[in-house]
Image (cartoon, rainbow, N blue to C red):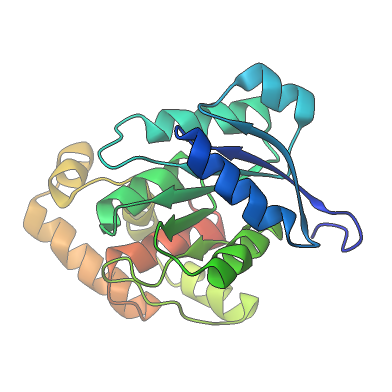
Length: 213
């Protein structure tokens, strides 16, 4: 948990300077965040020098290298939290970015107040996923309940959850584990039942929260 007195050091990375300036203005109006830098792309040396608490990483529609940018941030400052601001609402994209090390995922038309809240959640060490992402539903639960659910998974089921968190499809998981796609589907059905979830995105969040991913 960050010190409640110290403002959260924020770096904004957006390929469009005008958007970056608007985001900077939004966070400058809060008492929680201090924008220490804006940039058009991830610069490792800058991040190592500034050592931000959070990096806000904006992704243009169709960007294919966003996971590389997330990895670059985490390599430069392992303690930094990353929130991705994206156009995509598909769970496949969510799985990839969380698997790469992001702690948050928000859709670009998010309301300003909710966006600031999302950034606070990530800064405090929790995971934030925009509830409009397909199939995602936030569920509350105590750490004990999460631990019970984790312990209820077999070694094979835990392995499959980890691969789901990496953004792997059923076909890819099947090839990696040497099992049929039908067997993988059966495993996933049992995983969903044990974790009381209904979508792959919820499995990704579970993996992040319990340390599987």
